[in-house]
Length: 441
Image 1 (cartoon, rainbow, N blue to C red):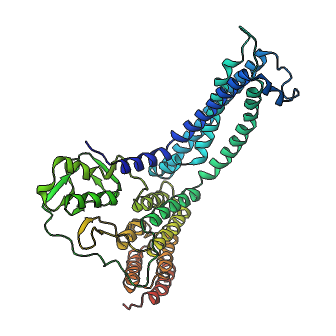
Image 2: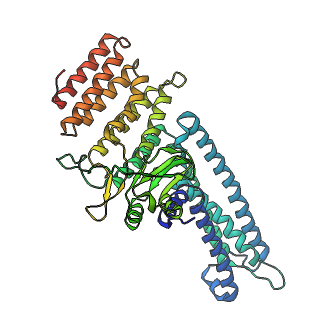
Image 3: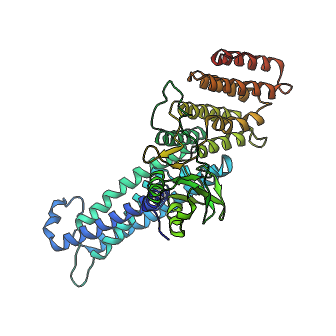
């Protein structure tokens, strides 16, 4: 099977950057190398030991003292590593049960945790790599500089441990979690939609779709569509002289054997070419925030729904979720909608990629919360205010009318479930939303 290196590399780098593998491993490897190389240099050039004052290491002629120091530091660091892992696992368990299991990916990508693990594992590796150099036979040798380096790493580890405890206490706060998800989602929007929205709505600029998509390319694996290499698809479509349409959006699940792509001129699609086209699409067992804006919204909505459940009953968290969701929607509206059609050359349509529209994004963000918050005055009022905030940032009449309709739907769902004074406050906020829309009942 022929694969597409850019798509594979991007997916691999995203996975490594978000896990506990690459950064701690690199730090541990570098410090282990430093311990081995430094002790070897000392043995080849003993004169370098004079740079260490005797007050720092008075027993510079006793290998057993050096061995004891290195062994003690290595043992202590591994003990602390076990404590760090215990704190981390407790945090992951609490976040998964209290908020949503889908937010674990944010904790996995936390750089502070990766650095702490890397520093402690690196200090352990440094001591173990330097330990063989401290020997009594056949000729006594004490790697003075290397031992002092290990001693210098101790306060570094202690400082990182103190900062890690502080960081975890802050990171486990629900407001911090929601804010981090919102920032990561906005970064995806900025990458997917890099251009500011112009006064003229350009969502309808794409041309007509081809009608002769007669060849279906089925998925060879099951999973979520995580990334589409549009540039690669366009170059392949141009090389084969075809037009390709993606049948599912990024973030959607695709089962093995289900058509993932449809192309024109099916006679040109050999099995090898079909594999080339499929290799431009990354499919995996879980959703990611590479191109999936909806996934960020889903995570925040999950937290809001769990907060409103009778078992938790935490409306303040739901209010924070609504606030952050409104920020994401405002960021989306401030950008030019992502392109769905790609041409090469300009007159030849090559790739069609479906993206979610603002109406779908708005419903994804607010509809479930609206349904479960119909009997909660605070959350319903915050939803209405969020709709007004979004409407105040746009000038498109269609978008404003859409927001007004959602406001009316919110009010209708709350009728009969809220007290009269709460309903009056809700109607008052709807009236504030109405002038923004320029529409009447």
